[in-house]
Length: 105
Image (cartoon, rainbow, N blue to C red; front, side, top):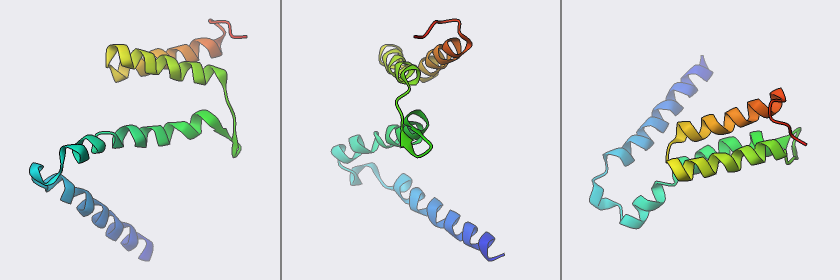
């Protein structure tokens, strides 16, 4: 029961701490701060993706297929500005290479 109570309390604290920033008037934040805050989702996404691409068994590993797929994803995203298209193209590349349809090395 104590663990459930701890989760509930921490959830409330987390929600309220985020809600405060959503309710702030726009003039409280400088344009530089607003610009910096726009990079937070990209940073969080990178922090979630990086370990799955480059870390296996607690060691840094470079997998060329995933690295090329990441670069393709960045390129498609830069050209199309479409997240779903870029993820789909890079995921399709990885699937085609792993099925042997696209020869790799």
